[in-house]
Image (cartoon, rainbow, N blue to C red; front, side):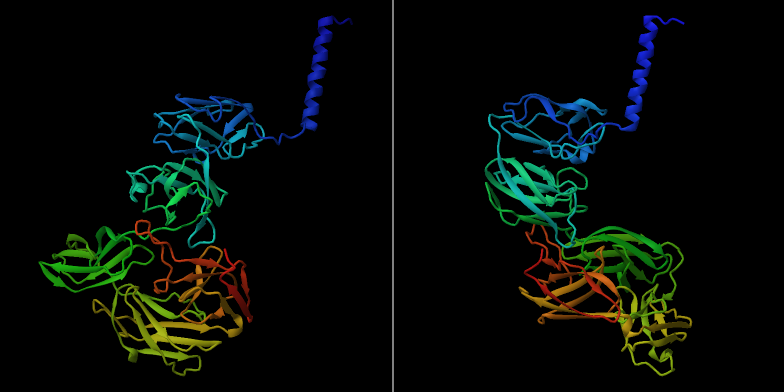
Length: 534
């Protein structure tokens, strides 16, 4: 059989295609590890006298945009987000502005890691495009170090901002207007650089900008600030410690939840809040307690179903009033429980929690005995805020205990008694626990709070030191601990956050650089030099 020239060409092409396909499937060629390269931009990078509405960036290969809404940081920030096209892989990216730009201003567009090549997702790291609407490019810089004021891990995507202190400046500007300059830590940085700044005086802040509006929203966002004015140029490296402000007290809602209880939801610090209840202008007695694990108060009252009730909730100059027509609802009744499930660790207190407030407790109807039936000496301490009755006694290792509350041992606010209650538990052997002695060095001032936390930051144990540099943690559950020291400036035995408008910083927290391993039947001694920390 004779083959024509056209047939031979066709067969040769088939062999060539098959051969190429086989080579590709076997080796695939060398992997592309190079990031895209900018080949051209309109206008050129670092251009001046910019008057347009669009920027075009052309690369040497097809690129795609990843998380550009989070990664792209424009400084100064714009009121309207620009349109960035295309949404599909392309060699050219277009940025179209939807508003007039400020005159004589240097703009920077930092793309973070959002520009990737289409095939291997190699990212063009921290690509920045800069232009000016004036005749010069501002070139001053400021580096800022970020940390969390309380937690060991620094938050991600923190916005660092500079507000120019001019004739229009006030401290409240951060709630209302966007900053003059903006940078972002993205998901990896703890040191951020603000670039292309002009000389001047500025207020420096950082926020965890949850709603990405470039303004501070204290209800949901953490803030950090430099107390002193920043003068640009500056060689300083300010450190900003982020914290969540305690909001001013305010009532958010109040609703009747049962026939003898109103739930009051609130924000802020509930300390020193006074609640008054009136029925037909006459003040009536009430009990107030915290709703478990919520920012709510429980207001307990005795009233007939046809009664009306007025609540006045006050703190300092704050006052809120609510009026209720009491509904005929089922009333809360007394129920008692304990969170101790068979084993009482040495560092914990046995307690019972009541569903309604307690009015009386009769120790003659409470039997507290050891395993050998001998009587235990104890004291009762009632925590009214949490409706918790604590049993205080000297624990013995490897000892079993029984607490029996006979009928009418407890009487609640509504004169309802308990039924018979029995709780059995054991205190473990002391060798099941470990002990930790901490020696503090270079303490700037007292008092201090020494805390042991787990990896999630939950406080597992704490001690308060007013003068001594030695702190003892006895009978610790075996664990690996993170240790931190809090300088308790106001001596209230807890960490306090700062306040931006009052220009108060959070109480200082120092972390021990290593994890502490405390095992059963171990005695560990650890020196903590507070000068040699983060």
